[in-house]
Image (cartoon, one colour):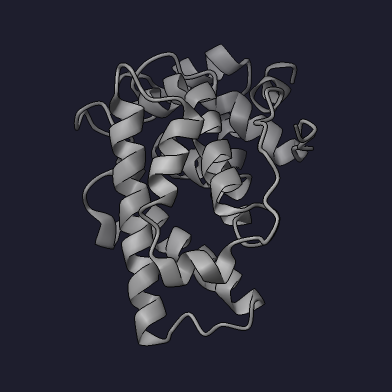
Length: 211
């Protein structure tokens, strides 16, 4: 078994995560004052971190991806990255649902069906492109561009379905299912030769709670 990762959050990340974890119900139903009171911060501190409460959901998803999906092809294999992603989503599920910007099956907006216009979708595609460039592969090549598009769509669908499920499969199970759907050309381009067995860091979410 691999050792548990120790992820050192920046002061900025710790404060933003503290704000995320202070949201006790759907983001449409709480005010900035409610959030500030729960987080025990001033309105000034809130606006130093987020332009509005509606900026919270996208930051939260990008934060999760930063430590999981975005490391595929660099630090993690596909299997490791996906398992870590779903493990972290499981720990953050309550907050993912609380920060949903609408009630579309109780799913987060950045995993919704409007993939082409989703900022998260574009960010994820860009991260895959950068990972390919680090391997000396042109992400703008037609076949690879198609693979990136399909992969991000599959990831989004899997995340939406899994997060919205009342009885989700274990992270390792859904990760294996998702890996099987990754386009082969993309999988081979970014797969590590000797993937390590993954263990999700259980201390990540708690890091913000002590702030």
